[in-house]
Length: 373
Image 1 (cartoon, helix red, strand yellow):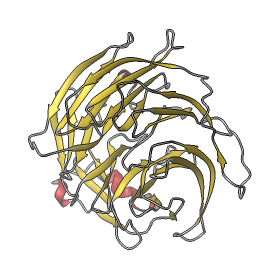
Image 2 (cartoon, rainbow, N blue to C red):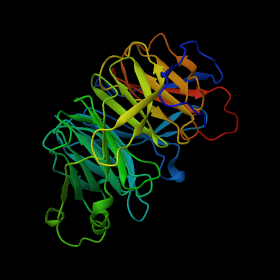
Image 3 (cartoon, one colour):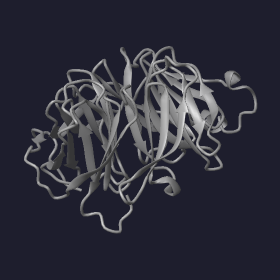
Image 4 (cartoon, helix red, strand yellow):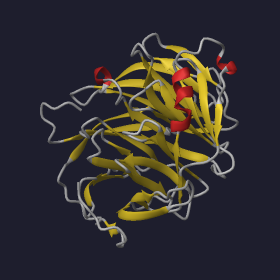
């Protein structure tokens, strides 16, 4: 990986595309007229790397990305509450490796759907307001984090339906939490961000025995001794406005606000928990992206990042280059609506875009020959 001297001014990427990787539009699906807020490939189980799920309105749709550019519908789920509006969906799985999808939205309820039998496996109730994002633990995919408008983050075991930990209170977020992400290597660590403009790093190490206990708990989930954590190990203020997406990049963090750019920065931890320093290293400009709740995605190896904007365009950045290199800009004359979220396939050869006009756009690398997605 590239090296940057700390303390220097952040390096800004150029908006001139390098075209080192090209994509072409291969498909699009009009799901309906309701906005689509979330789309995600399955990064958990290699058997389902070609599968993706979308969320919008009260519907969850599962698809298979075909090698010829086609998209086949596998299953549609419509929530029993017609007033539900799903904002987020994430792949998970049971202890027997049966695939789940967990979805949440305006009602604050998380539905866990067993993809195999196409039934609701669990309904997770506890949040007092909308669920803005759900993320799955990379090593223990029975665990998910949920970020909520109620100013809290919750850790759930989707296999047992238990709320294990709640992160809120004294030093927690002061406005709705919009995004969360597990650390890729430290199983006890995650990052959260929200509308209070802060980004917080949390550690579950002290309470990991409760995580383990959640797998063997035999009583009702409501009887589980859920623990509250009020103190993050680090709070950063690298943005001056709402922060609506954050992802780990090794021990660095990628984060986006409504400021037309994504930042790559390194948290500098103090010996004692609380406020620390943060070195912003790289800046990735994203024009026409000052609307909140636009989220970026990366491929599994973190080689590329893609993000949509308010004009229906997609910007693809090379994460392994310094200074930052813009790979390409994807656009189509009929893609004019806000792209709320993108999803990159495992190797970054397919990019999906969930649009506010109810359309899913599929772009494929033109250099993809005999490669998996």
